[in-house]
Image 1 (cartoon, rainbow, N blue to C red):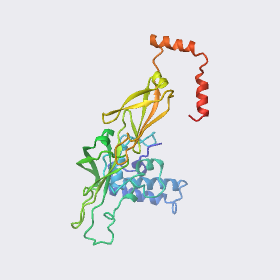
Image 2: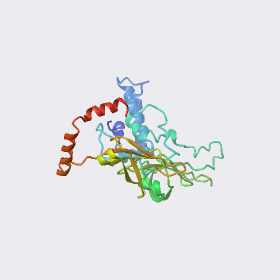
Image 3: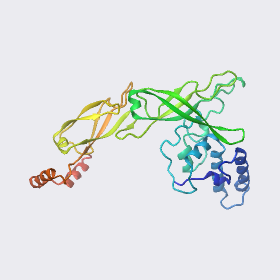
Amino acid sequence: MEFKDYYQVLGVARDASADDIKKAFRRLARKYHPDVSKEPNAAARMAEVNEANTVLSDAERRAAYDAVGQGRRQGEAFTPPPDWDAGFEFSGAGFDGAGGGDHSDFFEQLFGRMGAGARRRAHGGTAGRDATSHRGEDHHARIVLDLEDAFRGATRQVTLRNPQLGSDGRVTLEQRTLDVKIPAGVRPGQMIRLAGQGGAGLGGAPAGDLFLEVHFRPHGRFHVEAGNLVAELPVAPWEAALGAVVPVELPDGSSLKVRVPAGAQGGRRLTVRGKGLPGATPGDLDLTVRVILPSGLDPRARVLYEQMARDLPDFDARKVAQAEASRGE
């Protein structure tokens, strides 16, 4: 995917004010709008201009775009870093799509989860009430946790940056730090609700809420699928061949014993029920057997490998693998 320089598309500087961006958009719209333009590529150019304006005219999107695009150039290969938008606080209760319209893959990768359509600009959906009294808007952000937090529960300090449009028409970031209680058993994608930590209410109405969407940092051994923990289980050849009971250490530091059945081949999946993420319905622990061979450069192992080669001349690994594949194993 190629990086899109929206400032270059609109022909404005990176420190352009909101008014500068509005003027640039109107000028280009008059030039490329398909209803009036005679340019051969008017429709495509207008789509680019619309997309650039969608980002740069919105204080929240613009701040996030500036953070991820720092030092990037138009057209260079680009992949958004994982959880690149963690720490940004956005209006609305969640990431519900880009609000309609045709956008590039670049736009969808960055903003498909935080569009204006997801934001409740009418102060929490209070249309019809007294115009002088409105509940504050809900806000949302991502929180990135260690997997260990989901086992033990924890209290973590979270620093959020809230993009604001200043009186000079330029975007500034207001920063705040919150102590957040992480419940044991929290799942990826789950929302942690902080009551009253969203936008301020009007006319004495209560503030909105802040919703934190949970994500986990990469773990050295485990990854999470729903509430299940998934990992490799390294075993020695004799453990796989003869069967064994081997220890498995969990992210919280506890350990359990897992039985490896005799004849287990590499790639076999072993499931331990209820030993994944904790909760009212605990997840499972899914382990994939990985057979680790002693190095043939070790003289002791080499002697044993040579003996097996002599004593098992009819063993053909390729045929065994082909037979397993035909059985769907």
